[in-house]
Image (tube, rainbow, N blue to C red; front, top):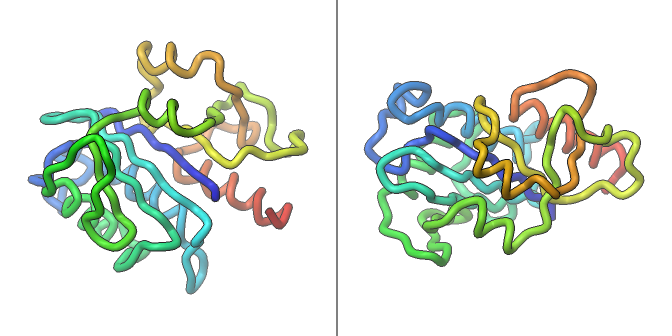
Amino acid sequence: MKRFIITGHKATTSGEFSLNDMPGSAGRMDVLCRSVNSCFFLSHSLREDVWCYLILLGEPNPPITILIKGNEVKRLNPDERSTGALIKKALTLPCGEKFRESTPGVYIRKGGLKTLLEEIDVTILDENGEDIRDIQNVPDSYLLSDHLNFTDEETELIIDLPKISAGPKVMHADHTITVILNEFDRRKL
């Protein structure tokens, strides 16, 4: 299973956002939706061997984690709006410390990065890391940030984790996910 964790530093934790204003009122939810789409979509099919975690850190109830499982998800279409609708629906559910399913393959719980790091061995995708093409054993779980850098608190949590670069240029999170998955495809992993 390949796992991608994307932090959404301003992404709302309320289901009261407008699907017509995901970059604004939803706290750049559009960045997260594009990342979800990059995790799963192939031409005419979905990657069933990928899980995507979205850590929502915006107001009013942070942190919340949304998990989307490629082998279970239904009604995910390759547009930001439908992805946003699945996230919005999940955010309307009350949740606790255990994942609760909102729609097939979409889960929600309270908690954020610290909790996930206790559960999953993670590699940081960082432009200063070792190039993925130079690594023999490619890791299967990755952490990325949205359009903002990691906070000081997040940096403290991840300071000792391995770092890998997807290439010589700094890319958007969704593009980085595509490059990493392409590397898996090339290696037939």
